[in-house]
Length: 244
Length: 376
Image 1 (cartoon, rainbow over the protein chains, first blue to last red):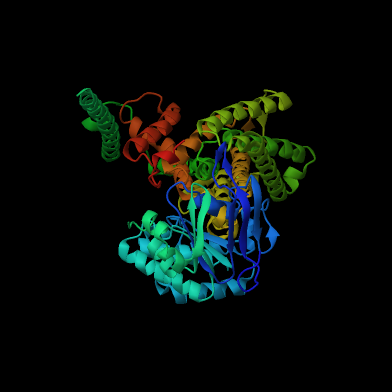
Image 2: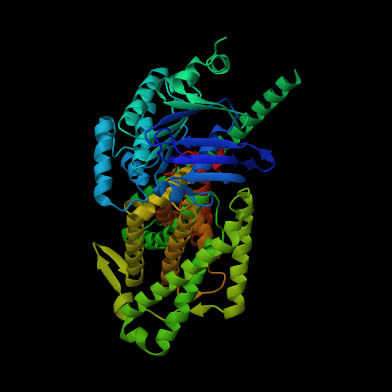
């Protein structure tokens, strides 16, 4: 599959099906994320959003179809292979290692990397992005506030020098004021050139910063369009944006 | 209506349990306070009424006796600590108690016996003791680590996703298996380690402490091993991965950490520590059988719980406090209370310490509060 300007997709699903035991979760899902894009995946509870992320990362193996990373089929490759090759996730609720220090959390993000200079460079970049994180470096991650933990979680993901950043419900569990700030942060990281794939319940907010979006319903992609078109779509407005 | 009645009843039951627990707490604390007071009175004047109240023959401890008990408690406790690390680390990573860990320790002690017996037979033990010591420690580490790793691969890994009670019971089975394997291979007779050379075993005087060379060696080797372990866990990439896996396996694997390999590493390091402990035990008490792992294993498990299970520093501190308590408390607290045969009561003291700590601080001295889902 090639994108608008002929580039190959960074990450792609080709007719992916997944099952948990006998339960059919994802049904013939086709997705593609191109370099430099910010795309979001919308959908209600139990629509298969988390399964999509887990399948992208190799924590769930598809029963049929192909997961393609940069042109290579990676169905049977472990998570570590995908992380090495540029896929990272900021998990839902941040999931920091709370008993480890902030610095150790960041270092674990670079666990698979061996280029010491590059790691130090990325650490500096994260300090530039989040000066607060630098102040808390030796503190236990569990003692930080929600907003600070979000910064560390994003920083930890960036430490693997990803080409595409997966984000699972980035606004979940944050105070309303922080949600705004968080989306601003994501927009900024995207503006610096990062490809981002975001799963989000807050459709309005997500689409306001995204380039494209998909809507997942009980495991099927029911809508696939640009963010503006989705925001204007009456069907979506009715079911996800709480209007009509 | 009925639901309301039930909840009231269970609330009343809770109150009764609380009262009972409070009673035990008060009773144990009173015993300890009275014992210590009587001890202090003995020290002031052995013939006064309070000192003679329960035990007219008690004379208290002299300072030298106290120091001697402290040293023997510390050396015993540091061995408990070495074994306790294995219980604690495995619990931290997998959330279950590996009751076969005492057997890993016994394998180390047994390996040490076989090797040192050979060394003595060809005269090397006397000629070059330090080289022999290094060799038997390395061999014990090797075999103990091997036992622990095979145990994980064969018995625990297939049960990784089953309820935590299952590997717990399996570990008891593994424990019996190893005991009987060693019994079958080497027979039931007690095996004696060769005597330590005189230059090492002789009594020394350090900072007014009279200390036998053997105990000094135990303290030094244990301290060095713990320092190495601390460095590995707190300062290396492997250690960081271990702590990450202990906290959240899913996210650890998301970071690219190989969770299985990290678990094997945890078992291996715990096994190595138990191997060192086994050698020290053998050199100090000079007698090993296939049952040697049992009581030290249980005591080490107690130490791990006392210190706060899942916590490395806690395991060391728990071991040292337990060892000191069971060495000092009989003379300090029980003798003034008129308890007969106090020197036989050190095991009872050890488990009383466990009960006391669990009564006052269920998460252990240095433990963090665990959520209910984290418990085995």
